[in-house]
Length: 522
Image (cartoon, rainbow, N blue to C red; front, side, top):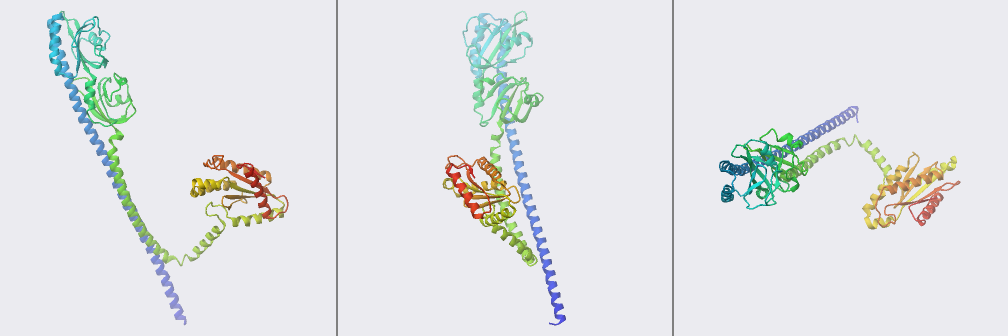
């Protein structure tokens, strides 16, 4: 080959190398672009899906608020109608009593009139006429015990002190004639001299309100309540007797949401039963009452959660498919780049492979400890060093107690996990650079402790036993109820062969097992 031919060949080889480098750089650039594109697609789809799920949630909450507000408005109209009918009845009676007085014949005529009108107001439980001292003059239920009085009732005390002719809505009480829970709607009337003549009371049965509220589907954790604007609970569905007449005017939720608004919505945790709900409330324009309708938050969002989960599952599956396809494309591009650069990286790969082979040759693949081959080499070397330098050398042989029974009961996979857990504790016991933790064979482990006398080796063995017990791995086939180990400890007494040290440790291990296991013997 001439000089020109050699130069041309070198030039060609240099061109091929430069071409290969350019291809490698181009392939890496393509792989980066593909990775960026994959990330952009995944993030865009995730952002769009999250936005869609969030807007669906907000739309669901808005629909729930709208439904609750509409229902609150309807029930508010219903309650206003009942109170208006009661007020009209009270007004008519007050005019008659003020015009005709409270003579027995007048009261009898009023009672007959009330009996004819009673069917027009289903919620009416009873209608009473009480004189200025609180004694009953008339009851729509008919006869009543002589001397029956309402002088201690809140409605009587209110009208006696308040000269206004306005209707008063009182707290829930038990009727003294029927024994039922009722709400009182009352107003005062005057005697012939214009003074306080007494009170006319219409009692509305709470059961009638509950019967209506119970027909409305507001979910398992829903609530419908009727209360006064002063924070006094009149009716609540579902019914709990201890809630009647509850004063929540000092409640943070009441102070935050109700006093300053005629209507609105809110979300908070109930102070009565601790359930978080979505509330809608509506105050009445004519009477000092408001209606609250609420649905359990978790229950109300249950359908949205199912839809969101379905959407997330479908989108996640699609993204996973896109990611796999994109990743395969990137891998193909990278493999092409790796193929182009394989000649350049051959030496590094060979060195790495040699290192890995060296590691595999001396390491147990299950536990990560040194294998039997390395154990034999290190023990032989340390035995010679101990003899040469006249230093102590100790060996621990560890055998898991009843390990065959563990494998038979829990399976070999659990047995491997148990062995790895114990091996990690053994590795922690090899604290010094010269110490070696190894897998001797099967469930037997070993610990070589250079420059360690018998006392130190026994201390290490006891600490290892405690660590193994502290793992708390259940072992029903063992009398101890958890995984334990037996340890044989041996130390060089004079110049000995490695086999003699192993045999001495093995004899100590046998004594530990025959002595009851879960112990160390020297």
